[in-house]
Amino acid sequence: MTTYEEVLTQITAIPKGVEGRDRTIQWLTTSQIVGAARDHLGHVELFLTGPALQARTKTVRDAVQHHSWHRENASALEANRILFPAFGHYDQVCALISTELLREGADRDLPRAFAITEPIIELAIKRLELSQSALLGLAGELLLLDAVFRHADEQYVGQLVQAWDGWRRSSRDFSWDGTGVEIKTTTGRTSSHTVQGLHQIEPLQATDDVPGEDRLLLVSVGLQLSEPSANSFTVPQLTQRIMERMEGTGKGGAVADFLAHIASYGSESGFGYHHTTMSNDAPFTTSFTPAFVRCYKMGDPAVEVLRRDDVVSHHHVDAQSVTFRINLPATISADNPVSGIHRVAVAILGGEPQVQ
Image (cartoon, rainbow, N blue to C red; front, side, top):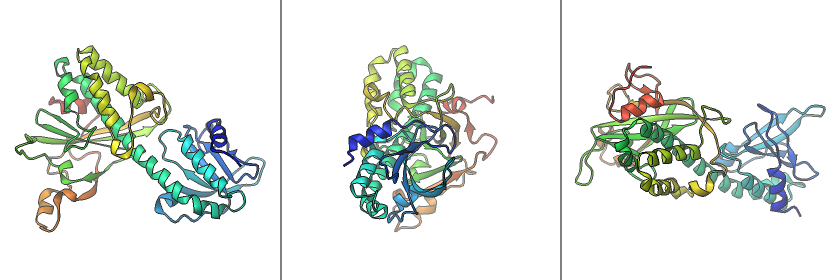
């Protein structure tokens, strides 16, 4: 019987696709029913030969694509492709699912083996999606922090480190001198984000425990997966840059706390990045290129989103429980949003960004 270790060894050795849709499929048994490949960015995919498989759950249905794949000097390959979340390689997850399919007799009866293994596939994909969301969020927040730290006066670096609260459950991702900053990150082409509670799009009101906010900025960060380049970055690279900025301004004593906060980011989903031991591990070696960074002034009446007054009149609705999606245009007015990572950093610090 094929073991997990044997399958993992085969998958680890699979080369990247040359470009686009080109793939080199590594079949895990001679029957060529279960195979794995990588795209040109190195992300692993699972191929299951035969007619379209019928998944019972939406999570798995969304992850499986059925196509007829062209092969040079051979007949077309009809196969189902399971697309894993595109952050990191996840060789171990692919190996686990492949091994379970083979143990359940995929070479003899793929639909039956798939039906039995589907709960494992669903759990694996959901876990990867949570990790994907956390990694993307951390990348966006560190990109902004790095820019803010580089534009701030050295004397404020220590306070700025303490102003970042995005690493834990809190009312605001970042707060500075009466300004609240909510950071939303996406791999999409537009500033489309899920809002979890009206507090994410309105300034916090002063209470006995909270001083309140004079203004709220929503920073929309668009990231694209990319090959390493002069314009790309990884989470370890940003972490290292911020650490060096802290040490260079005499705030090296706060580095340990900063790294602990990063390690706590997304901990409720099982995600955690430990810089000293994981900087070379997938998925943290994933390279991103910023597609856009926009800073929306949410107090602007031209920002047409759901407001508290739209909800509180409905007495049987908990305003804090309202979740919805906002689709913000690239341009609302001449000065809203502020665009570009450097101009956004200056705007957060209270300066007036210069048109470049």
